Image 1 (cartoon, rainbow, N blue to C red):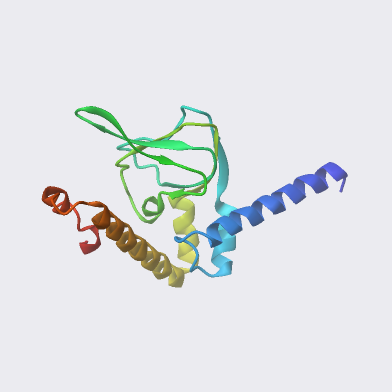
Image 2 (tube, rainbow, N blue to C red; image 1 turned 90 degrees about the horizontal axis):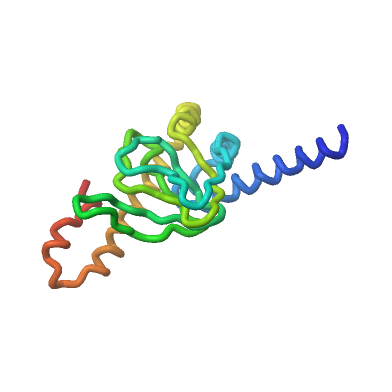
Length: 175
Protein backbone atom coordinates (compact mmCIF):
# COMPACT_ATOMS: atom_id res chain seq x y z
CA UNK A 1 0.00 0.00 0.00
CA UNK A 2 1.46 3.37 -0.95
CA UNK A 3 1.23 6.49 1.18
CA UNK A 4 -1.61 8.03 -0.85
CA UNK A 5 -3.70 4.88 -0.31
CA UNK A 6 -2.91 4.97 3.41
CA UNK A 7 -4.02 8.60 3.63
CA UNK A 8 -7.17 7.80 1.67
CA UNK A 9 -8.02 4.81 3.89
CA UNK A 10 -7.26 6.89 6.97
CA UNK A 11 -9.60 9.64 5.78
CA UNK A 12 -12.35 7.09 5.19
CA UNK A 13 -11.81 5.68 8.67
CA UNK A 14 -11.95 9.18 10.18
CA UNK A 15 -15.08 10.03 8.21
CA UNK A 16 -16.76 6.78 9.29
CA UNK A 17 -15.90 7.55 12.94
CA UNK A 18 -17.25 11.10 12.58
CA UNK A 19 -20.46 9.73 11.04
CA UNK A 20 -20.76 7.23 13.89
CA UNK A 21 -20.23 9.97 16.49
CA UNK A 22 -22.89 12.19 14.88
CA UNK A 23 -25.41 9.35 14.92
CA UNK A 24 -24.58 8.37 18.49
CA UNK A 25 -25.00 11.96 19.72
CA UNK A 26 -28.33 12.51 17.95
CA UNK A 27 -31.64 12.02 19.81
CA UNK A 28 -33.10 10.02 16.92
CA UNK A 29 -30.37 7.35 16.88
CA UNK A 30 -28.76 7.53 20.34
CA UNK A 31 -30.68 4.59 21.86
CA UNK A 32 -29.68 2.19 19.07
CA UNK A 33 -27.10 -0.53 19.59
CA UNK A 34 -23.56 0.10 18.40
CA UNK A 35 -24.01 -2.57 15.70
CA UNK A 36 -26.92 -0.69 14.16
CA UNK A 37 -25.14 2.65 14.48
CA UNK A 38 -22.14 1.26 12.61
CA UNK A 39 -24.34 0.00 9.77
CA UNK A 40 -26.10 3.36 9.51
CA UNK A 41 -22.81 5.29 9.68
CA UNK A 42 -21.60 3.24 6.73
CA UNK A 43 -24.84 3.79 4.78
CA UNK A 44 -24.81 7.59 5.17
CA UNK A 45 -23.30 9.77 2.47
CA UNK A 46 -21.74 13.20 2.74
CA UNK A 47 -23.10 15.78 0.35
CA UNK A 48 -22.15 19.37 -0.34
CA UNK A 49 -24.62 22.10 -1.22
CA UNK A 50 -23.77 25.54 -2.61
CA UNK A 51 -25.32 28.78 -1.43
CA UNK A 52 -28.84 29.05 -2.87
CA UNK A 53 -29.12 25.33 -3.61
CA UNK A 54 -32.24 23.51 -2.43
CA UNK A 55 -31.79 20.58 -0.06
CA UNK A 56 -35.50 19.75 -0.34
CA UNK A 57 -38.68 21.42 -1.56
CA UNK A 58 -42.14 21.80 -0.12
CA UNK A 59 -44.49 19.12 -1.41
CA UNK A 60 -41.86 16.55 -2.37
CA UNK A 61 -41.27 13.18 -0.72
CA UNK A 62 -37.53 12.69 -1.03
CA UNK A 63 -37.17 10.25 1.87
CA UNK A 64 -33.98 11.91 3.14
CA UNK A 65 -32.72 12.97 6.56
CA UNK A 66 -29.93 15.54 6.94
CA UNK A 67 -27.34 16.17 9.64
CA UNK A 68 -25.98 19.67 9.06
CA UNK A 69 -22.20 19.28 9.44
CA UNK A 70 -21.32 22.81 8.37
CA UNK A 71 -23.07 25.84 6.96
CA UNK A 72 -26.48 27.43 7.38
CA UNK A 73 -29.83 27.01 5.69
CA UNK A 74 -33.19 28.77 5.57
CA UNK A 75 -36.44 26.90 6.20
CA UNK A 76 -39.33 28.41 4.20
CA UNK A 77 -42.99 27.72 3.50
CA UNK A 78 -44.97 28.81 0.44
CA UNK A 79 -48.53 30.00 0.89
CA UNK A 80 -51.06 32.01 -1.09
CA UNK A 81 -49.37 35.13 0.31
CA UNK A 82 -45.89 34.17 -0.97
CA UNK A 83 -42.92 32.52 0.64
CA UNK A 84 -42.35 32.93 4.38
CA UNK A 85 -39.08 32.34 6.19
CA UNK A 86 -39.82 30.04 9.11
CA UNK A 87 -36.38 29.88 10.73
CA UNK A 88 -32.67 29.43 10.22
CA UNK A 89 -31.05 26.01 10.39
CA UNK A 90 -27.48 25.86 11.71
CA UNK A 91 -24.69 23.33 11.78
CA UNK A 92 -25.26 20.55 14.29
CA UNK A 93 -28.98 20.28 13.56
CA UNK A 94 -30.79 17.17 12.34
CA UNK A 95 -33.70 17.48 9.90
CA UNK A 96 -35.97 14.78 8.49
CA UNK A 97 -36.26 11.92 10.96
CA UNK A 98 -39.92 11.35 10.09
CA UNK A 99 -38.97 11.06 6.39
CA UNK A 100 -36.93 7.96 7.25
CA UNK A 101 -39.88 6.12 8.78
CA UNK A 102 -42.48 6.51 6.05
CA UNK A 103 -43.77 8.53 3.13
CA UNK A 104 -43.83 12.18 4.04
CA UNK A 105 -44.43 15.15 1.77
CA UNK A 106 -42.33 18.05 2.94
CA UNK A 107 -44.30 20.90 4.49
CA UNK A 108 -41.32 23.23 4.07
CA UNK A 109 -38.42 23.95 1.74
CA UNK A 110 -34.80 24.06 2.90
CA UNK A 111 -32.32 26.23 0.99
CA UNK A 112 -28.61 26.67 1.71
CA UNK A 113 -27.78 30.20 2.89
CA UNK A 114 -24.05 29.38 2.85
CA UNK A 115 -22.04 26.53 1.38
CA UNK A 116 -22.98 23.45 3.37
CA UNK A 117 -21.87 19.91 4.07
CA UNK A 118 -24.45 17.40 5.25
CA UNK A 119 -24.53 13.80 6.32
CA UNK A 120 -27.47 12.31 4.41
CA UNK A 121 -29.38 9.10 5.06
CA UNK A 122 -32.10 7.80 2.74
CA UNK A 123 -35.32 6.10 3.80
CA UNK A 124 -34.50 3.15 1.57
CA UNK A 125 -31.14 2.52 3.24
CA UNK A 126 -32.51 3.18 6.71
CA UNK A 127 -35.42 0.76 6.33
CA UNK A 128 -33.19 -1.97 4.86
CA UNK A 129 -30.94 -1.65 7.90
CA UNK A 130 -33.93 -1.76 10.24
CA UNK A 131 -35.15 -4.96 8.56
CA UNK A 132 -31.94 -6.59 9.79
CA UNK A 133 -32.51 -5.26 13.33
CA UNK A 134 -36.31 -5.25 13.88
CA UNK A 135 -36.00 -5.00 17.67
CA UNK A 136 -34.31 -1.61 17.30
CA UNK A 137 -37.15 0.25 15.55
CA UNK A 138 -39.22 0.78 18.74
CA UNK A 139 -36.24 2.66 20.20
CA UNK A 140 -36.44 5.16 17.36
CA UNK A 141 -40.20 5.49 17.67
CA UNK A 142 -39.83 6.17 21.40
CA UNK A 143 -37.21 8.83 20.66
CA UNK A 144 -39.54 10.50 18.15
CA UNK A 145 -42.46 10.48 20.59
CA UNK A 146 -40.29 11.98 23.34
CA UNK A 147 -38.97 14.65 20.97
CA UNK A 148 -42.49 15.51 19.78
CA UNK A 149 -43.73 15.96 23.35
CA UNK A 150 -40.76 18.22 24.20
CA UNK A 151 -41.32 20.23 21.02
CA UNK A 152 -45.03 20.69 21.69
CA UNK A 153 -44.31 21.64 25.31
CA UNK A 154 -41.99 24.40 24.09
CA UNK A 155 -44.60 25.55 21.59
CA UNK A 156 -47.24 25.79 24.29
CA UNK A 157 -44.91 27.86 26.48
CA UNK A 158 -44.24 30.22 23.57
CA UNK A 159 -47.92 30.81 22.82
CA UNK A 160 -49.50 33.63 24.73
CA UNK A 161 -52.63 32.77 26.71
CA UNK A 162 -54.82 35.10 24.67
CA UNK A 163 -53.87 33.29 21.45
CA UNK A 164 -56.76 30.82 21.72
CA UNK A 165 -56.91 30.24 17.97
CA UNK A 166 -53.25 29.18 17.90
CA UNK A 167 -53.78 26.95 20.93
CA UNK A 168 -56.54 25.17 19.01
CA UNK A 169 -53.96 24.25 16.38
CA UNK A 170 -51.74 22.40 18.84
CA UNK A 171 -52.12 18.79 19.83
CA UNK A 172 -49.57 16.94 17.71
CA UNK A 173 -48.79 14.76 20.73
CA UNK A 174 -52.42 13.64 20.69
CA UNK A 175 -51.89 11.82 17.36
